Length: 255
Image (cartoon, rainbow, N blue to C red):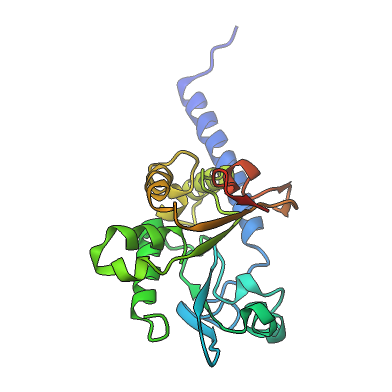
């Protein structure tokens, strides 16, 4: 029996690693192909920060739309670039029950398709949202901002104003897709790691801390969970980005 020379074995291992890296690089390329590569803050994505969409003559409350990863303050809530299809701004104010509701959208840079790395995490995004709400001349959330407000005495007055949160396929227990994406980022030669993706891996420290804190401050909140029913096209396959068991937060309202 012929023995494999050490140098040939080393070359084979390098070749296999290169092949795996090439495969993941192609998967990452497929996921980013066809998506906008313009800077967040453009007319397609929408502006960063808190954006006022509708100001009624007599406001009795505020409703804030907060997008997910690689979304935008406008992009996530519009079927296309057509301004008339930006429904939180164009359609929602015409609903009788929203006649006295001030409407906002919030944008932050969580575009994992960017090649440069990011040290920002979920708590950073929540802190930025809370700061924007606090300095808004109109207001004077999301779960992350609500938790931070409850724990910070400087925001005690603001924290009492959180009334209802609607979770749209939010990965309360993490998402397997985040774990796959994280592996592709690590194997990629062109894209750098993002800390906020690590936070969304199932059973991550960030996920556990948020869930543990939130259960202590959510008793007076009205919570609604929505989950996906249609798989997303991922190029070579289709899958739910967030599974139902992760989208549902406890025994709260489920849709």
